[in-house]
Image (cartoon, rainbow, N blue to C red; front, top):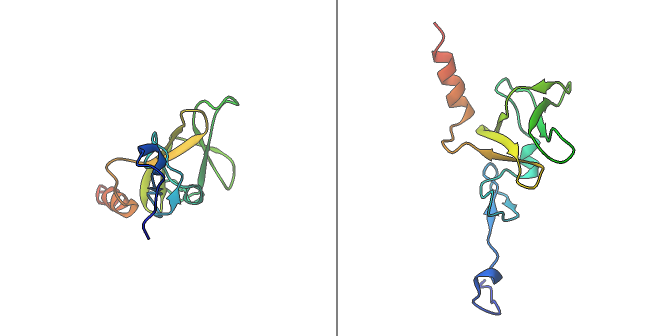
Length: 120
């Protein structure tokens, strides 16, 4: 089906964007064209397989900190894995947290396999 637009003005044509881990449609965001959707964010785990969540450090929406879902303890770093995709959490421009994949993405299995091969 071809959509008919009132004009040919660029702003009238809505841009589409997909979650990088599940390919679900998400709201278009020019600043974060590769962000992870809310449903996939809930699946975030650390390299040990423990569920993690991320939040702003201050009430005004600054900083980014992770914590384990099961016990609430703080975790180091902002790296996580979602469906095998290595991602990082960061403070969003107007507050909040956004999770995005690393540019050179590798599956978690590949990384763990390499780590295992480093052992003597």
